[in-house]
Image 1 (cartoon, rainbow, N blue to C red):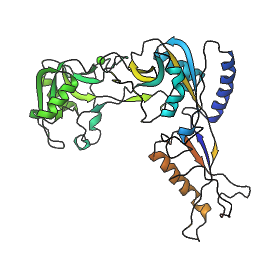
Image 2: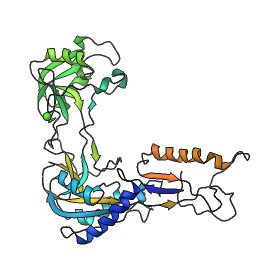
Image 3: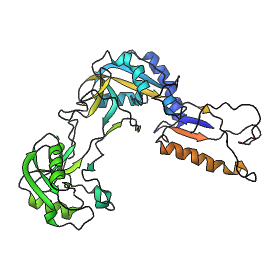
Image 4: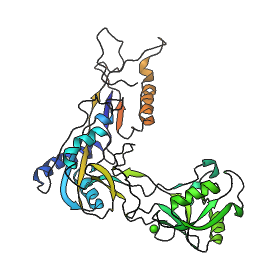
Length: 362
Ligand SMILES: [Ca+2]
């Protein structure tokens, strides 16, 4: 069975051509000092996923670029010369990078605010029904975070929405009904006390149901009628994403970060730990390359029905392995295929020779 890292947006041929160009340009590039580290030579670390031969073992090569630029320019550079701005996916990678990052106050990495990931404070999905949580009524030009970390949403007196710093003090609209019940206009309550979005959420949850969600134009109009000043509604976002599209839950925030009080939607390593900073700041940055790696793994399968021909089940078995990867959100990184032996068959009856079990799928 072969496994290889799947680099997003690139075919294998494009990647091979790119890597050859990269090697040449690396030699010629004088503006940067490069710092390389392979991750995963060991695999005895407790931080490792039990799927030892999966992405946590794939080497990432990091390139430390000593040129002070805004986050978006750093991203552009890394995408043109390497794979992307650095994705850091576990403590082992942090430790490998520390000798470089600890000595620098600010270094851009690939993490930044996910400006699309809006969600409602009231989370009960039954309340929204099909598509009901997706209604938006943004004012022209909004949401316009623009590096300002505006992650809470207000409604203006004409019923249009805008993202805003959550620490602004505004009136707010609470919802006073039950999820799934028939809405009446009296279910929306305007509270004119000025509060931050978080204070407003707490107040609504203590005294009513939650901050108000807006599921359609009718509800939007009902709330608009209540307003004589702009007011918080229940929409917000609080998630971050990696520039290369990686999905992993690892984080290594500086104490107190991410801070929501300043203009700060991009992440730098601040003495090695992560901190959110205004995207327009000029810092050195860290690129990375995810290397393609192939690994052949023998697996031992037990037949419970001797009449079954294993060759007939090869696709089904592969699907099960693929599902395991999907369940662990690793399917973006790994492709599985069977390896045929010289006789053209995949499966062979076990002989007494001990299997070299390099990757326990348990
Ligand atoms: Ca805004």
